[in-house]
Length: 257
Image 1: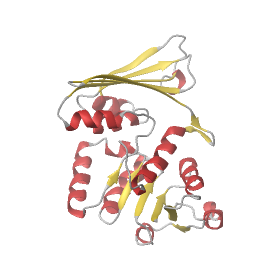
Image 2 (image 1 turned 180 degrees about the horizontal axis):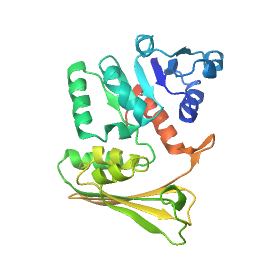
Image 3 (image 1 turned 90 degrees about the vertical axis):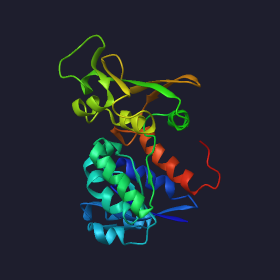
Image 4 (image 1 turned 120 degrees about the vertical axis):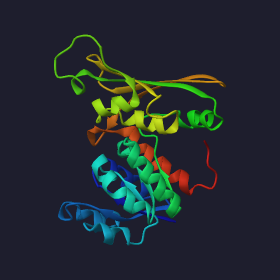
């Protein structure tokens, strides 16, 4: 049984709680929240302990911490978590800063703990990592298409490319819209070499991603169109699902991919 501590109890956190309730190898024991009264009902509903103090939370009876909050929270607590526990984070934007990323790697090397990064709203990362491991990865490009109003203030009637360039620059200009490009860069050829195209499209209602990969083993294209989480239109359904998938993969004796 893997005992889980969770940071955040919003739409994604609640989705994970609901899905884990019937899992025999997974159990959420502790949740770190800002407002204990707001989530008081979770204690009876999910059989968890609520904490507002980080040190009490991290010292509770847990094996791994799942972050389901936001980039700021993930960035704040991740170094302290990894000194003591394994972690799963969905706010991969916390790792966009290269100096911070280096710090996290140094902590992991000393502590021996593991940091798991769910694939979030995209797929194909296992394919990319395999080619990278062999030193055969040449090019990675991602085109992200989003409803126009989420990217531009003016009203447009035709699709518009609002950014085209390296992932490192995309993150600076659109920090709330390119979380997937960070995951892709970490899995592949890095923030400087991963190419990002961001498109504002007035004719779509869902986010979509097209990833193109070129390696010495061949080429691949992955297309994904993502629906929002039913309980919160601002959250990605696939991102929530990827946390659950990552946790189940950790405890499964046979790991695919």
